Image 1 (cartoon, rainbow, N blue to C red):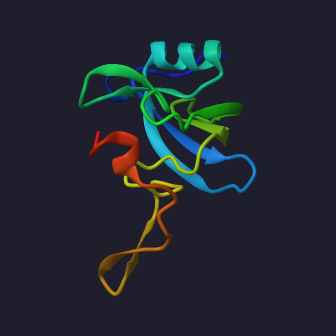
Image 2 (image 1 turned 180 degrees about the vertical axis):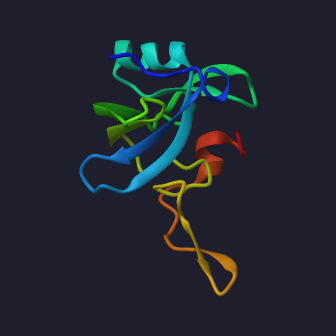
Image 3 (image 1 turned 60 degrees about the horizontal axis):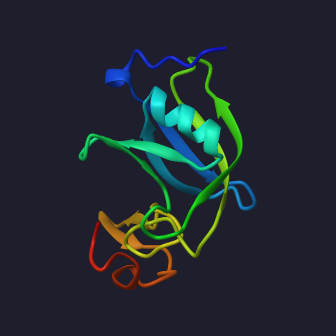
Length: 126
């Protein structure tokens, strides 16, 4: 079964979920090359829309995402990737998950503590 890369200018959303906890860690986008590289290497690889190039999570931080299972939705235009996260977090802001804010009383507030110092890892925001 092939995935449908015809929507979203050749991209499909990739929801990254921690296999052990079920927590959503991040959402990225994959083109066909990023998807193929993910299958070949076993590490989650994405297409950066802002930089217009492929990137593998952990290339800079060392916080890699080891692919354990890949699922697709009924339209075959989104993937859910269950991973083992190597490292304290995946968010470039220093959190375990990119989803560390909750809307409360009309304002976004942090719902978690930082897991690592992003300045020490990235030397500033990537």
